[in-house]
Image (cartoon, one colour):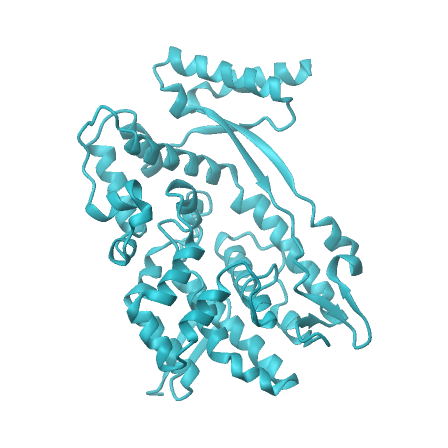
Length: 419
């Protein structure tokens, strides 16, 4: 067993990495880099553990899961097309490293720091020498090839693009199962093995699904829809992100130059993200970010102190749904909430506002088609359910301090009755 490493995973059970196989030796070496180990300190679901207390797992756990899914799919595909084996280093490397560029609290960083994790994943793979040098040992072009798979344009190698970046890719096949498991919201377990066993190649050389796998795909897309509605777009997630956005906004616009402690790397994340260097990027994670929030809660100025206290102590702002109101009525509710804030000495720009959020339906980029051996068809043409799951919807929340909840809810009822 000296050459094997076992990861005991709640979703995929035993994930065995065997360093006697060069592609898996590469994976083992990448896992041991500082940049990959940092992912242990980035929560997969950001602030969602404030709602679902089991949602504590990390991007590290998820990334190893994505590699495991990619390997299972790879084994299925080379049975049908042995020459696909030339892609294994690219596929495994991309699957493992696709989330390397995440900031603190994962997707929350995209909003609060305007951070682009795909851009950073690509940058680390192509230019960060500890990662790049490992990849080059297994193929001189690997850093560039993997980096290109992380961008949205379809540059080459369609099957790999489908597996790494499409609506039904290795990433989603892992995180929907994992997030559902960790949050305790089990909307039926997606049959991963069934989806994988139904994969095939269509005549155009891309990956397709046999008709027997369509029900498992439908199930997977229903799970995606439910996870977005109940977890990713949960109102407490929206409120937490709002609070963190305001915290960073206040620090950026500290016009009175009030004293505030902030370490050098965090300062670059906030004030000059475009000049972020690898060492500053890697120095920021959930632990460092939370430490700053705790420091600011204890040693800063208002309203920064109160906002940090709200987040750290989980004594959050409240939110009510106002999606059904007209634009004018929404603004009337906002004016009412702002008035309540002013009377009670809350900064109305910081402690209340309207947050619009959209739930994006499943978007078919036509990368995965159904192939029955004779005809090729798109998923949505084959399935009414999948067609339905493609619709998007928007909703609006009014955010405000909890002590006004009754007044705001009453005002919303009045507006509803008058509309």
